[in-house]
Amino acid sequence: MSRLGRFFATDNPVMVTLSRIADMLWVSIIFLVFCIPVITIGDAITSLYYVCAKVIRHGQGYVWREFWRSFKMNFKQSTIYWVIIVLAYTILIWNINYLGLNMSTKTGTGGVLAAVYLVMMIILALITINIFPIISRFDNKFTTTFKFAMFCAFRHILHTLVIFAMIFFSAMLIYVQFATPTMIFGIVLPGLVGFLSTYPMEHVLKKYQPKSEVTYDDTGTPVREWYDD
Image (cartoon, rainbow, N blue to C red):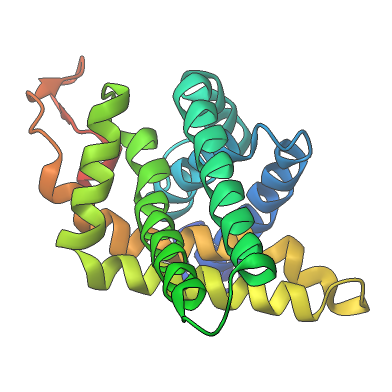
């Protein structure tokens, strides 16, 4: 094979990297479009993670096909969780604002309650980080998903905090650059953060993935699930 041929080979590290970048950009665009209705944001997050883990990291399937597959399959549970999370944050933020406007600062009660609500918001954020990847991987009942997400959030707190930091700084970068020519970050970052988050998250999820029975194709080759790679 010529040097040029080797460069354009699909297993060439440069081509693999370029392909991943293209896929991250493509899934970011799809994700942003599916976030437009607002109520579908939860399912869009679930599908974003699913594509980043299965397609971009493990090279199984195609971006649009797998995104749409996950979106349809997980719509109900993801959307219910998203609505509950938004309502919970709305109540907590409203309570903090109410305390700031109405509670006396002389007793310090308002400040203590505001701190409690802030801690509750952080805890909810840590649990939320785990909820949507879990939905994308496991077929659990509604309450089981929440319990598992809460367990993972604190049992694997360092993994959760790494993802939290990535999301936080990405959100800050988008906020600072909003409505400027560099708003391109807002288009690129969802796919990039989704891809990077698969490293700590997959390390956690694999610990609890039930072992599947080995099956074989027509040639006798063992068929493995994509997350076993």
